[in-house]
Image (cartoon, rainbow, N blue to C red; front, side, top):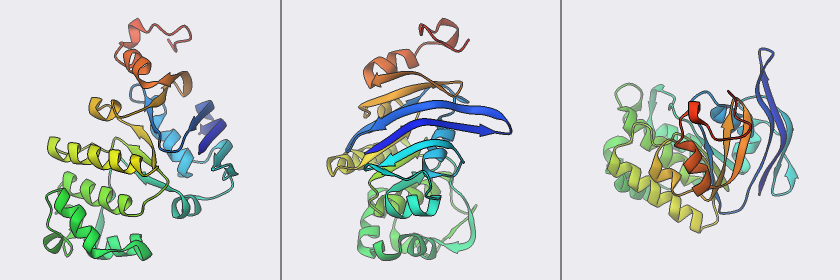
Length: 235
């Protein structure tokens, strides 16, 4: 489905990602792991083209390396960032309708909002600014993105600012979408989200140190850097 060949990112003459190769299959949940500063968020941004990169990116056997962010997002890829942008003087209703366009379905929105414990009629006229909590803004962003039914979602620490109940609701939605052949690339330190994953890769200092099944990678993730058992560790 999504195949990355020899992807490189250089920022201010510094190599941030080097020779990244991996493939995400249809319906697969793919985990990017290791600690802060290892290049995980940069990799997600390179896939969606928020960060310029060199290399090949194939989506359903189509080379999309020359497609800009709008084209990738409009057709196939959804991206939920860790930090949700604020939109001063823009109501949730106006924002959601502008983003969803033909996918705008008020009845379905009500169902999603209810699922997260929010009342659509109460929230739709509120502005997407500092008057909303971090958790409220994150729920609006999750709902809006998942309404669009993309083929693959890039989730960057999506659980940030969510309470335990909302995290479980999120997990249930991801499971349901996977059953409908949606794929995910997840950056997360949350063990419940990690346990959802099928395969992944371990990034360290912008390089792939190991790829494979999630159970084995998770064991490595729990090691401290000073005791790293990888033969090609970045110390």
